[in-house]
Structures are given as C-alpha cells and as structure tokens.
Length: 552
Image (spheres, helix red, strand yellow):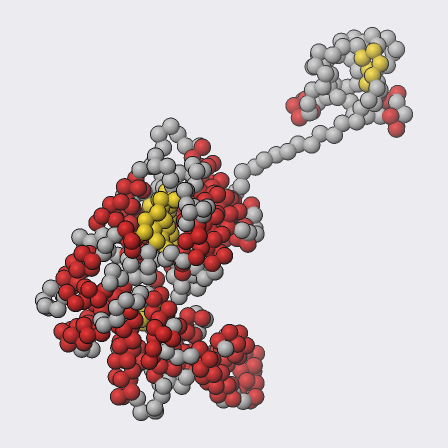
C-alpha cells in the first residue's frame, strides 16, 4: 500500500474509479463524517458505505486527514461461534452411554447382593476411610487400600459407597470384575465416571455431551486424553460458572478391584492418568482405590514409585486384624451352633473363607449343622497362604462330584464338564449356558445338575454363570492348590475341539441350504429353533478358530 499526502476535505477519499482495473482496491471508511465536496483534483468522493457495512467492517486510521490510498486490498472474515444445539448434546451423551459399563456401578443389578461389611464390623478402618474422605484440606487426594484376596476390600468399598451416597457426596463408583467383559478392562472407566457426574448435574451433562460430540474418536484415545476431555475440562468449566454459594458438589470417586483389570500395562496407564489429571488440586475429587498388591499398584506405591508420596496408603491385611470382625460375623450367622472358634481360626484373616462357609452350610440340600461339622476338619492346612481356603474349595468340589456321579448314568467326567462350563463362560460371554449344554449334549438345563451343590462358590441365573470370588479361579488354575480337582488346560481344549467337531458333523449341506432358503423366503414358523441351531454351528466354528488355540 502506497500513500500520498494531499489536501482533501475532511473525510474525503480519492475516486478509485480513475484507477486502472489492476489497481482498484476496496474502499474503506476513514471517517464517519460525510462530505459531498470535491477534492482539489476534481475527483469525486467515493459513495458512503451502507449502514450494514459501517457495522460489519472495521474502521482504519481513526482521525486520519488529507491522504489518499492508491492501492488497498483488504479481506474481512467474520468468525461466528454458536453454542451447540441441544440435539447435538444429546447425540454426544448417548454415545457416552454406549461406551459406559453400567455393571460397574455400586448399585448395579448385575452386582445384586454385593459383599459389604456386617454391622459392628470393620468399624475402625471404615472410620479412617471416611475421615480421610471428609478432610478436604488433606495433603493427598488419593487413598489406596491394598490387601490380599478375600481380605474384605470389596466389602469395604461397597459399604463406603453406600455411606457416601447417603450423604450426597458420592460422585462415581467403578467396580472391576475379572469375570465380566464389560468391566474387566479400562475401556469403560472414564465414560462410566463421566456418566455418573453428568447424571448428578445437568450442567455437567451438557458439557460432557458437547465434549463427546466435539471429538468422534475420543473413546479410542489414551486414558489421559479421555480423562482430560470428559472429566477435567467439563468440571473446570462447570465450577468456573457457579454462583458464589453453589449447591454442594459430589466429590468422592471410588474404584475397586484394579487387579481384576485384565492387562497390567492398562492398570499402570490408569494410575498415571489419575495422578496427572485428577490430583494436585486440578480437580475437587477425593479418590479411594482398592486392589490386591499386585505388580502395577505395588510398583506405584513402593518407595520410589510415582504414587509413593502422592497417595495415602492403607495396608488392610497388615494394618488391621480382622479376627474380631470375623468372629462377630460368624457368631451372628451361627449363634445357635456351638462350633465357632475353629471356623474363626480357619479363616486366617480371609473374609472370603467365612463367606464361602456361610453360603455352603446355608444351602437347602443338607443340614446346616452337619455341613458345618463337615467343614471344620477341612481347616487343616497351615503355613501357606489360602491353605484353609484351598481345602474348603477342594472339598466342596469333591462333595459335588460325588453327588453328581450318584445320579449320572452316562459316566461323564464331572471335573472336565465343570471346568469347561466355567472357562468357556469366562472366555466368551456370548455363549450362554444353554448353548454350552447343546455343545456337550447335556439334557435340557443339565448344567443345573452339575452346579446344584456348588452354589456357595457360583451364582447361577437363567443362562449365566458368575463366580463369587476371583480366588476360586486362581485356585482352579493352580495345580498345587487344586490338587485332586485340577484339570490340565490342554485337556479342556481337546474336549472342546471334539465336542465342536461332533456338533459340526451333525449339520449336513441340505440343512445349511434349508437355512438359506428359509432366510430368503422369510419363513417365520419355527424360526427361533432354526436360529438357535444356526448359532450353535457358528459358535462351534468361532470357538475352534479363536479360542481353542489359546488353551494349548
């Protein structure tokens, strides 16, 4: 741009029509004072910009006088920021729901009748946890509780969850479980926490929905990124816009069973994300996390680990003696029996032992007193971790095997069938018990015969199997612990393969062609039966190709 000073009436501009086409530029407002006089050179003034132009374009050189613009090229780009529409927020929120894990909530139906502390038990440690939670000015925002399997960690988490919920301070909970594919990994934890935050506050729900809508691939990104985008940033923005005396904000995050997350590297990633995103005053949350002291959390909490100073650490198995609490639990349930001391001693500080014994003697298929007297001599193992628990598991299985073989007329292998049903159910939740019964040629609901004396260890619903405690799976996999009830995994794969191939050979080409014709004709009569048989074939093929190789 070149300028040449020249006398001109105030507010005047030179006539750009006298320029050649290549030198013409856009005429801009210099002054808001209109003038119709001519310049000394006789050039006409440029027309006054319209009202809309005056208010849409910027003003250059305010108060400038007596100069001419020979060339001016100016591009004005307006940026308009519109808030997201409500429909877009709902789309983002619905995508979040699809990625959440409802089974992980403390009050989920999938966790019906979860373990929790009995009345008058665990009072000291519960009070310590609650005092830490409510001490908002404490130097740490993370409490890590570690303890051996069966020491009562999940019961404490459940109890604290319910107490916090009753006080209106529970922001979210997440209970990992190794046997549930929706919550045995970290993929659902951030969406599930964000969902619970949004459920408690509509303003947060809108911010979280907008965050999901703004990044279609957010759920495929690292945990730290997800946590920043879906939790930290929405919470910051929400709290920044609160009035001077806002409503109470729920601030307690509870995470149970980190050790039941399937990959140690992802456990480590979650611990790092929690530290870098949620601690050091970046959020108002106080986080209570429980886990077995396995590699990932042990490394983080150990001296030199990244959480050694950042976390308040409770060692449940070391810091608290549970014998008195176990005694009270047993006395409450067995107050009419005189055989208590031996059972309390056999528990060896493991709540899971007492809970399993209680369920076993309470089963309706026998006398409680007789079952209790049968259990007491099993508590003989000492000096090894879980020795009494292993003896308990082993003898419950042997008793169930004896009862099964007394009524089974086909000479089937009880231990092989039991392990098949358990491990297939754990490996592939798509296959329900009914399809496994078809695979193993059990009579309708035949699995009930196998499980009927194992309800102290397993929970059976219409078509699903749940293990009460992960320690039972650990027991089955360990040859030394399982002893006489151990089944080599290779034998399971061999039996799987044989059953799958037997079922596949039952499907002739004519039968498969019949399925195709029925699908093309949309025949409805008996469609459920046809679909069921077709799924059995697909199940066998998929299991052979994907699961059997991993068992060898």
